Image 1 (tube, rainbow, N blue to C red):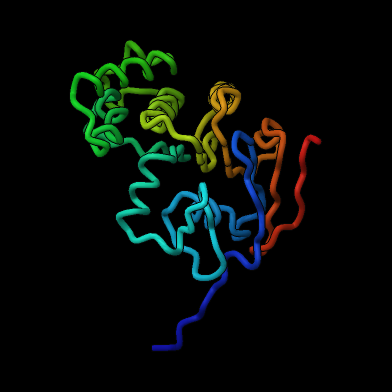
Image 2: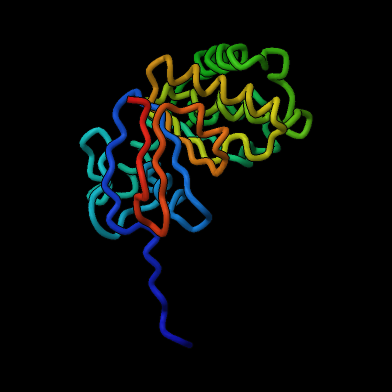
Length: 214
């Protein structure tokens, strides 16, 4: 077998996402966008440097503490929705609450509240295959909000949606930011990125430029 080749997805990126801000992370394929999101989301560990969330250095946390931080502080929205097909909308929304140890009645009330907020109050008993793409993404957003996260991480959240449905999802994400949540959204679409007042452009693992509304 040949020698392994080390690929540095991010190289000396230094950036701070302020509490309550809304950032789009942009760049061509292979620029490090997803790696950055995975680091912030406690899905990967940095092999060098530091990644801090609320003062917690992720490189120093064991797997259990990383999982707990992810469960309690972060909400994820994915391009492919990542709903569990065997579960109903309600059960998908409740999933984070199960891991948080919520009792059934409280969890049921929270799921109904969130489903109503994303206009899925009449779809609680449906499974993902019975929903449109936009409805699936709204269900995924409701699930991301179940733990009342401080930070929303969105990876191409409109990538599998038509333009009209995509705009509805972006309006919902913008509303979540207006309520005080930090939003970090990976996108390759400049039109989508225009929804955020701040944009971080990556290229070859480096920060190419930063754009802010100020």
